[in-house]
Image: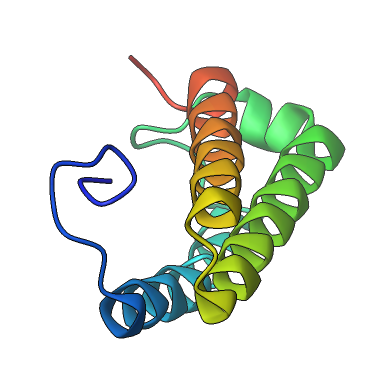
Length: 100
């Protein structure tokens, strides 16, 4: 976040490495929301509207994959745009499916 806000210097290799970590992390949480896992900080909609939840997860994974691709290119404007889209997809899912 600091790099896209201009608060830290741009280092293509570091940005690409961090984007790769985020891309990996984006694939991990979904198995934690299967049948019988209700509760915690997740809203009941995770299970009652599971199709919407899965679609939100797929949208986030696509946005993060686009961020990874942009990071590999080193194009700072493309990275900023992709970072914004990835952040918005994360926030959207949390807004709809996570207790406040």
